Length: 302
Image: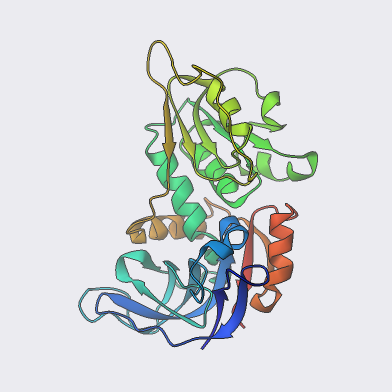
């Protein structure tokens, strides 16, 4: 079958190739993939994956073969999935990493949800009640950022969205941000929760703003730059502050279903910023890496 695989020693780190069909285990479903999304790290660090590995993690499609040893979606059901090997005609994924898509929904746009949606949702959920708290979202124009803004506001938080340039401000107020600023230095006053996606100098700057008892979730590193914390800056008097890395996407089926239901009910907007054929991956990747995409890249497996 056709797939996009890792090529650590050649080109941009990936290429389209013919690979063996995936074999679904007894607790997996086999999916005919229709649409996938591109995460920043998947193209920026493609060369870090083993040679020949099928890339991608987010996809939607229909079930070709149901699991034989676990309850799960039936054959023919439209599903959303989070698992390795999504950039292919077909993917095999655990039943606890898929969710059925309700009838009547735009299936394509849901492909941008899995990785960024589960990341934003689990980071905010682990922060405790958000009502009345001040939540800072850095890199707010990206996929995780746009969903974190919406999910935090939905829980009653006061949301501050930080973007890297004036051209990336658009739409964030409509998504629920009470304040949108260009650059971390423009943020005034303490914050209670941070969803941090940029890394580099932004990470220690956001840490300095964190109130006693607050939590900072480092969930991305779009800048590609190292972060330097001043001496003693991680010490605090009073209630402890917490720096966490949220990379847990295990068994996401319930969270995927929850996110899909929010989209269906009009309570969550999918962050589609670029849409085209998977044959245009080079073009899409360049736009994403050069920060010309507000949100996520959506590809049709045509």
